[in-house]
Length: 451
Image 1 (tube, rainbow, N blue to C red):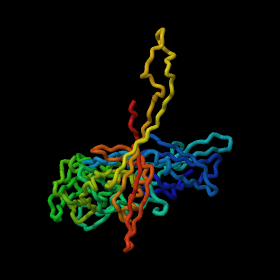
Image 2: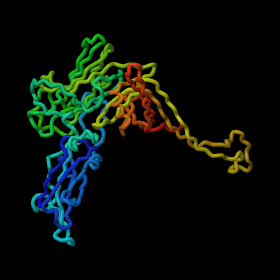
Image 3: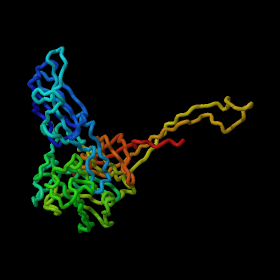
Image 4: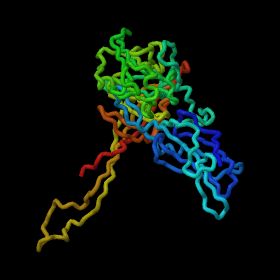
């Protein structure tokens, strides 16, 4: 007659994970008894899926909704964020409601109950108002009691304060120093706000500050990218608002924000880097007061070093979905080989035209014997990374494991498929080890044949 939930996923969490719910009922011994779970988006009356399950031998119902929920999240192709972009597909709020159904006898008709007392109707028992799920994964040995280790990427700190803290909560495993060329895009993504509508504690990404330096390490520019609605972010609409003004205005979109920090993102936003730039730092900062940055409260700090073409090669830039369901970037700077194989479909026809439309067969020395009627082209590229340290080599494995990879060509992104990756190891006499990747990939959409 009543459903109890004894286990449920924490928030935020990742779709490609075991999202476990354990429920029980004091009616579990009833005839034809089944637990019923309805999955929906938070705030929606539409049920995405209904899952029914008989109790286990100890009368519990164990539901793992990870594989199901993963069908309802996807990547946001926001490589060109300028400056901000909020989640549309990569992070969503889901609600899971539990109920039960049973009959008075083994031959009777099963009736569905809300799970609250003996009230008939759709499932109504929830563990929380929603769970926030991003389009990422959790490795088995990284889990905290089945859950995403969110404390490493999300902390609800006191808001509107001068509190000093320095965190690294960007959703990436990339090294904190990266290399980038003019014209290249790059983004970082962070959890923003909170999941309780608290007005006093949040991971409040107020401003992302880009500070630009020349080769003498002298500051030559600084851009404060405000996380507000008309800049693509939110939930603030004005920089004068403090967190307590907007805590209840959060949405699934504003709880996962992406900011464009590549030279081309900055240029698209009207912040073109001076030609003398050598590196720049990026900091995600909180708020001290209305219209005031808390410069001593950083949620992430990264550094981007200027890189140019290597050995005459412009480089091949990749963007890939990382383990958090957002984007990482890397440019392979050394030799690039482009190969095209051709599969030819052909037939052989007679030199004599037996299908002549006239009363005599004309002699035609241009008539083909072997005729090609279709050529299928397969384009492959083989690229080489620069020499990498252990940290970079380990991080780049995510590129090879990712199911969603794009190549930046000019200012556009095109889908590609990585077909192989080879690791070359070089150890010098002092036992320092460096690595190089040789990667083969294909465009996901091959060139049309020349007819």
